[in-house]
Length: 173
Image 1 (cartoon, rainbow, N blue to C red):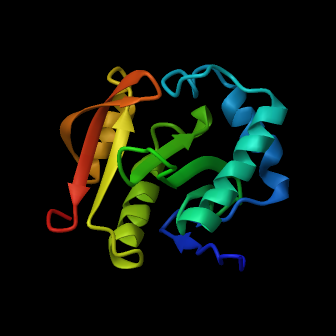
Image 2 (cartoon, rainbow, N blue to C red):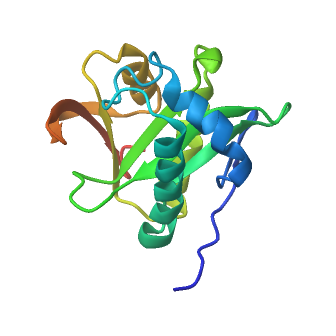
């Protein structure tokens, strides 16, 4: 299997890029913050679990042709979090998701990066639809989904947890 080239997306303030080995400290800190993982399920992670999950994210690109990007602030190079896609075996659809470190909340970065990813899904990947699975109490993520044009379509069971299913199709985009 040949290695897949992971594209880099640029927005006004962000760079969505492939994960690098040097990201592990920031990625582990992201998932060690109880407020960040509050609605993600599974609690905080140790460094080992973060490393394994980062490897999973990179592998998702190889096996699925799309995946999560590391989000970097263009001006400073700071690691903000992750934005991108997930559709592992058995998933309810092609999911767009975002997770940012707490210090970056409230600046519109999740919306900005999610819009760029959505454009990539429809224009470069040719997707007909995209979903976002969001914990019912996660008001901040619900606002991001609505800002990028997604609408509540129902609920989905995700690994034993009921999630809201927001979506947008190519025609609505």
